[in-house]
Length: 291
Image (cartoon, rainbow, N blue to C red):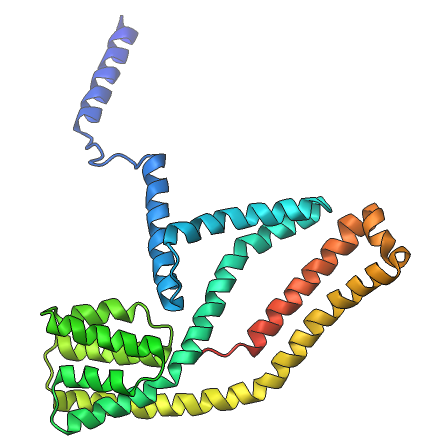
């Protein structure tokens, strides 16, 4: 009886303690909610990346390409060997991101030349006694790149549509691939949000103009010096696969062990493909110049 009474007392004390322990206010999110949240974040990130490239591509389509590309490359690699299927899956997983980064770099280099020109026009208009809409109009007139011109015209149109300039600038800022233009928009956002006079804007934009011109001089000098390295890397990246293709067509028996033996299909060919991909990636990283 004493044992039963002790056990009952332990159960009662344990129940009392559990009754006073606070429960979680929010249960852990279900797997479905987590998947939806991950997809939403991926779509938002893709929307910003596609906006910088100026591609008229729906983020859902880009997400579908990111899912389909690894499968397609893996199937193509599986036609030769299993290691190439793994390599194809990895390449397909990274290829859409690489392509978007390449397009972003192209857009950044094309738009970067307009930054000093746009800043100079805005500073001159501010010195002449203009207001913020005049600064936006001067920037649109001075810009030569079509997207830079279109962005400032959009800011001007939203201003006359009674939209807050800082909100319009913040939305268009997300599309800027060029770092110099992104700094211009950041400065304009701060100036308009804090209601700074145009005279203060002229001083800030003048300082940014000097920095942008200095950055452009350095970028052009570095691009000129690295152009030869890029041509050499591209030649080396093409000559080895081209030579292998020539031997395959001209003398198949010479390269037959690569396709007809297990050592060739499972070791030699995958290792060669990995080295080729690594060489192209390293060459691109070394000669890459971000503006």
